[in-house]
Length: 322
Ligand SMILES: Nc1ncnc2c1ncn2[C@@H]1O[C@H](COP(=O)(O)OP(=O)(O)OP(=O)(O)O)[C@@H](O)[C@H]1O
Image 1 (cartoon, rainbow, N blue to C red):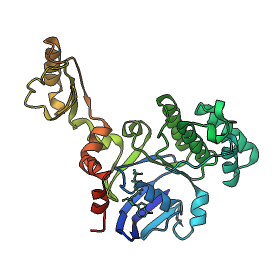
Image 2 (image 1 turned 60 degrees about the vertical axis):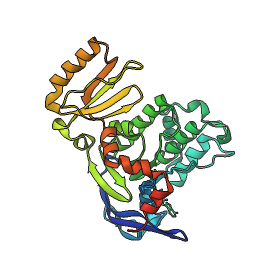
Image 3 (image 1 turned 90 degrees about the vertical axis):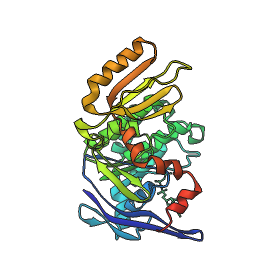
Image 4 (image 1 turned 90 degrees about the horizontal axis):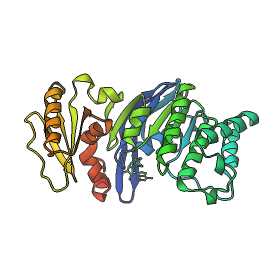
């Protein structure tokens, strides 16, 4: 069990002070995939870097099965493996060499590392590039290779910082299967991703970070509000047609091109369904969808406005110590 308690990380520099983690408390158990979601600059990478002993917290504690990882960063590095967000340069070395070398450095036996490396390459469908020099590989394949490096000799905790970036949709599915397999074999997996819709399928629990703080922590279905939660209503309008007048129970409507997305209470499902069928019959609506809210809907609601600001310099100022 990894236990993070009241974790604070303050960066001090010439341009000011940034409180990147502001009192984070989380625990992740063996066999669990725990998602960390949050806008750019929310403090996710900072959190992982402290767990693995690359950064020293300003305050708070990190324990793994009772061992103090802050006091013992070398132990943290041996018990936890990390796929970093930045791509490790792989010039003059093949994926096979990189994966096997990492596994050996992390204490794996030669045969087992060779076997697991080959199994990962097959499972991620990157076998054809396994002996190709790194400088000739595409960004997506390099990303999968660095996942394999983190997974070959995983330790107790595997931390993955945006592992699916640049990876094609088919291999993303393979990647999520391997993430799940790591957990099923007993590893605790901490997964940072912006692929919220995909995270929903792979994580057991997740936390949403907003400017260094946990603003929500739950299972995906609990975050979505369970059976009584609002429904998502989506209409696709024919080109050039204005949106129809919505029934009064449909609220929070917003447009995106020909699409109109809104919410409706769960107990209005029948009425809204009938209305949608009628609208399609008259040609006012080309297509429609009525269903459960997605995790992405909930996420955008939680941090949407902050996320909009997050790419800008202003947010860096907003994150300055309050
Ligand atoms: N070495 C550093 N020195 C100063 N500030 C830093 C440093 N590293 C990160 N920060 C700041 O700390 C905050 C959190 O950054 P962090 O990289 O942890 O966010 P993140 O959630 O991983 O973002 P992203 O999703 O964009 O990767 C940001 O405001 C960032 O600018």
